Amino acid sequence: MPVALSTTEGAVRVIELNRPDKRNALNDELIAALKSELREADADESLRAVVIRGAGNDFCSGADLAAIQKIANATYEENVEDARTLAELFEQIRKVRVPVIAAVHGRALAGGCGLATACDLVIATRSARFGYPEVKIGFVPAMVAAILRRNLGEKKSFELLTQGFEFSAEEALQLGLVNAIFDDKAFDTAAIRYAGVYANVSGSAVAMTKRLLYDIDALPLAEAVQLGVETNARARQTSDCKKGIARFLEK
Image 1 (cartoon, helix red, strand yellow):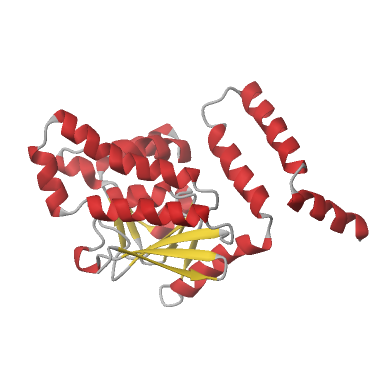
Image 2 (spheres, rainbow, N blue to C red):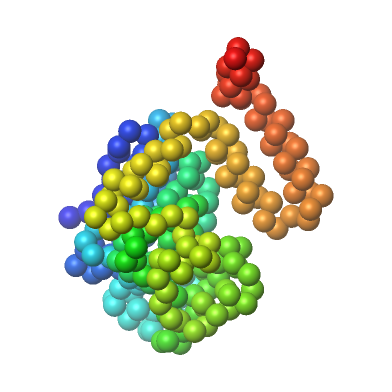
């Protein structure tokens, strides 16, 4: 049985973590499968969005037991290489041309919460739970820290990463870590509808906006504004923009 499944609904690619008996815990095979599915989705020009969800009762519970056992017995160099595989997945999500949306139900904990946080957008069921509990076993939620710190202020990031408590979807919404909450029963349909919005706007404009938002993270103001100028100019040369201007002028 594949550890990740994909289906396409209209312009939306749905990638499903398929280890329900393990609460979709991350291991090398699943991380590799997610990378492969994302590469394939990125290459498909017909797609406008990607949804990542979990099979069974949970989105993703973090690393599985075998992965944790491997960490405990590995050398520093082996652990660097192992950690890099998850870091590469987080970075890859930001490089995918279209928006990548985490659809969280059940629990998204540790690396699973990191995976959700790494996505461009996060939606959740009302009953969903989130948390970065790594510190409880002497571990550090290290790769996601760089992303979380870009989403939240310093003190709230510190609290979430160092106290290890679970928090609700409503709390995540208030923090800005979740974009929208939907009823549990209608969640799958709601997720496709939410992602389907991107079929009705310019794909090139969304892709350029995504790249711009992430590229300006580390830039001083003047350089960030200049990058915006250059992106604006490139956008004006796209067929989507030229057609949009023509439609506007015809009104």
